[in-house]
Amino acid sequence: MKINNPLRSASFCLMVSLLLVSSYANADAIRDANRLLRVANMGKHFESLALRQTRDILRTYASIVSMSAEIALPEQIKNSIAACYVDEYAWEKFQPGIARILADNLSQKQLRLLTDFYLNRGLPPMEIQTFKDTIAMAEHIQQLTAEYMYQNSASCVEHDAALILGYLADRRESSEKLFHAQ
Image (cartoon, rainbow, N blue to C red; front, side, top):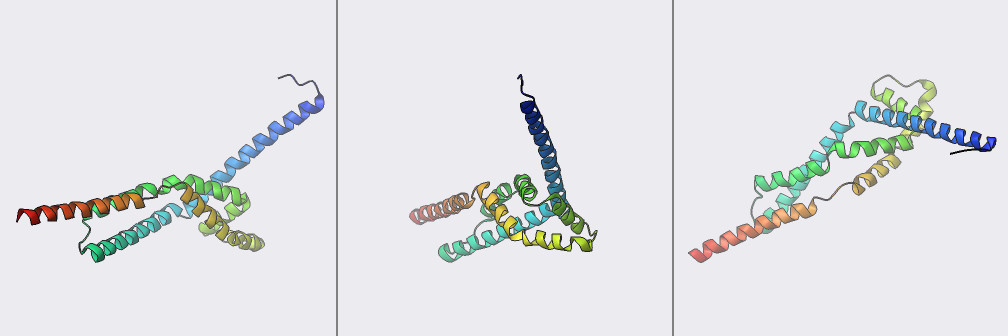
């Protein structure tokens, strides 16, 4: 590409320089966001919450089946349902997107301040307002994260329903065969 105009040449160089600086700053922000997620042990918290929710879902399904069909769900069905949630809600699937949300919504100063906080490095008095401002953003970031997770995960409900209904249909069919055999 030939650039004859010196002004155009300077503009082009400035634009390329800004893109490179922006790219490096963006990489630093992602690195800082990933570090924050790591030191805050978010993967473990995320997986613990997902496991708790899976247990609650299984308890609800078992209760519904028990009340309506007066039978207990077998462990094989429960394990298959739980496996769907483990696969769909694995931390590794969401971590890059959550890091991106943090990098896009928090400054590097805020990311580093939170990282230092989680590493028990204390909070400099001159950064108290920055810390308060950062904490005030938590609800917005939580909302963005929930939307991201919703948009980037499949539902296990149809899978769960098919397993449970299939199991109930098989039991009914077995009962009918036994009844007709007598």
